[in-house]
Image (cartoon, rainbow, N blue to C red; front, side, top):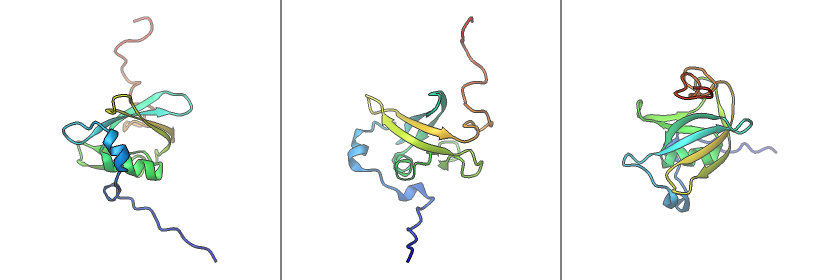
Length: 129
């Protein structure tokens, strides 16, 4: 007899971060922490986004890149509407506890423009400049 597992909610607000992890975070005044997102295969920086404790808890529980959109004031599960999903392989907190590094397998573009990375459009300084 097969047993269907309980489906995981698509609402990050329903997830609570482990208090031990939460105690290590240094959130800004808005309750957010920057998340630098990096490709696992190339180590290329793909994007920077914001997380709150619920988005981080959801990411840790589901391995789906999940962020908090300041402009839309809502959670954003990467790829839910675009199909450009982020399968999270690793999450690390920096030495100060004020930035999260999220390493992902990226499907499609990471940037909202459709580009692979948010950082390739207009370099301010590069080799030979």
